[in-house]
Image 1 (cartoon, rainbow, N blue to C red):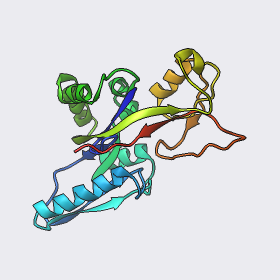
Image 2 (image 1 turned 90 degrees about the vertical axis):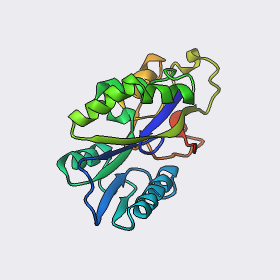
Image 3 (image 1 turned 180 degrees about the horizontal axis):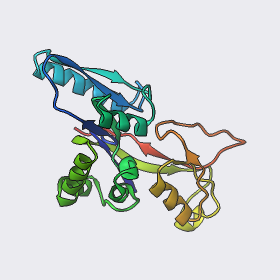
Length: 213
């Protein structure tokens, strides 16, 4: 079982480069589309911020990778061109390699254990590393558990051998697939849901979206 924390979105990462000025519109980019739980969370965040600021702070949302993929949006945050971005916590391992750990299979026993990891010394150390990259970690949301679905039964690790396992284009997930004997053709978008076709079906790893309040 792989648990999926997101920065600010559960799943997702919300980053802010500079303190918000009063009476201004903030920009928030995300890969998820308008039908996703992450987008619903972003809408609620925007509504709460506007209410708490007395209408002086509003948020303009850019879903569905409108501003580019998560790497492009993180770069925009670092450059001061975008105020905030939501992305996967372990997705940021391309700049902070230690984040591979939190998304790897079987590291967290359950949700409570995941919370302890993120809120504890290790999580605080990672937050400091974000700061070193010019990114301020605002919050971490729970996105659910990553599932492996297949067109044939998988009863043990041995059954993974020889499978073409479609994975998000994240190094540690590709390494996991290779180490269990599968062949992982990388999946460009970690948010897309592909339907199986009878003539061209293959196993895939996808996040199971859950809401937790």
